[in-house]
Image 1 (cartoon, protein in one colour):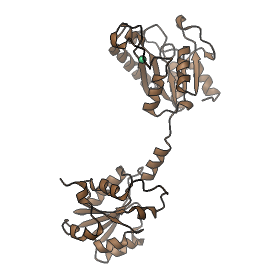
Image 2 (cartoon, protein in one colour):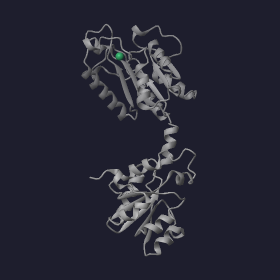
Image 3 (cartoon, protein in one colour):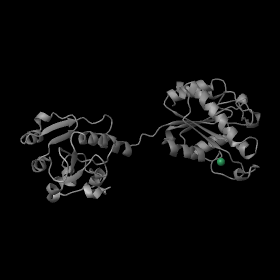
Image 4 (cartoon, helix red, strand yellow):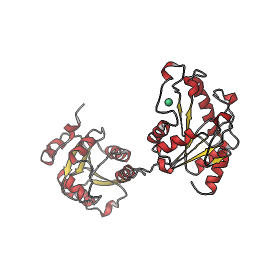
Length: 342
Ligand SMILES: [Zn+2]
């Protein structure tokens, strides 16, 4: 197998190298700044029109003439050529320095000239040139939805998503202390509706739950995972699918050796929220957290979550909540959505 650099050829050597390639020869040109699926698809379709494909890459100077922006191309011509040469559809890569490749086409005399996009080939100078020796020119439309310019924009302005972080026990389900079996798991009244409403309002649903029962040996990680799977399945069936679930299995006073530690994820520490933000691309300032304990609110504030709300817990051990307290998740979400605070 030849190395990509073997397929790169500057214009002085080009005619000699092209003579070795099987005919018909297809030629196309472009900047190919950041290669994406649309390019690969296009080049593959171009290659199938003949027996060999020559790609003429705009030199950096030539690419700048196209007015795509002062910082384009992002990649230098030699690097763009190298990436193209790595494609099996591409037989040879060369460069051109001018605004259009007309001079190069005259020199190469391809059997078929291909242009990407919705061009009216009849009006192109390139078409008249290839026809002068009996060649043809063909337009291949690009696959919808792929463009280097769009890609660059998405990278520069990542549209971060907002999330509703929800505590589990006491918020999503009734807090019966160390719930770990599905038969003991009961959704809080209206909780599923509230989660669906949050989803419809554009929030990712992220569950962040302390599960020290695992470190304490009350139930195993497997039992926890099984319950979580059942909860997720049940919510998904009700159009309230959660996007992610994070749990902290640790507790310093635990009895299960590796889990009996001071960790970074147990609320009131913000570890789970921060990890979720990283994993899912969450705009924390635009997000909210709903919990039933002051430690939930502390975790939200430590992570920089924009809004946090306390709902009253049905577990007497968790009483003593202060501040904005709603009866339950449903009441909280109803009011938030009504007051358009979210
Ligand atoms: Zn932890």
